[in-house]
Image (cartoon, rainbow, N blue to C red; front, side):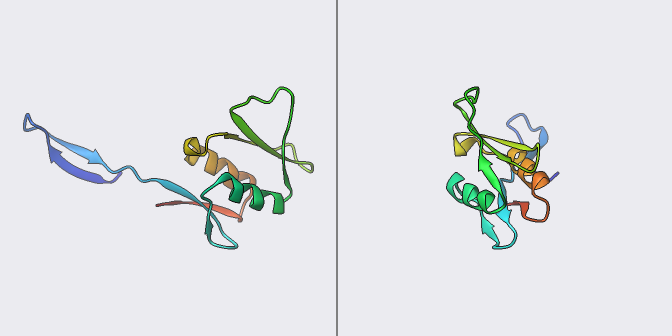
Length: 102
């Protein structure tokens, strides 16, 4: 845990944590994934396909592989794409992606 110790107006010292933003990196190209367009291009190259289902919720983007039972579910809004989604992609694509602190 990192941060800076600060005094509040009552003179009490507390740790103010620095929130580190995470980024998803495609290791073979060292490309930072900064949009769903870039992510979809990389995933398609790895054999992932967009998953369309009549039960699909409108707020999700989903990808699947025909050779696997894995499913990647992401929020449709890229601003809600967070480290949990990034680590899901890393686990399902070992040695291809990495999550780093920005």
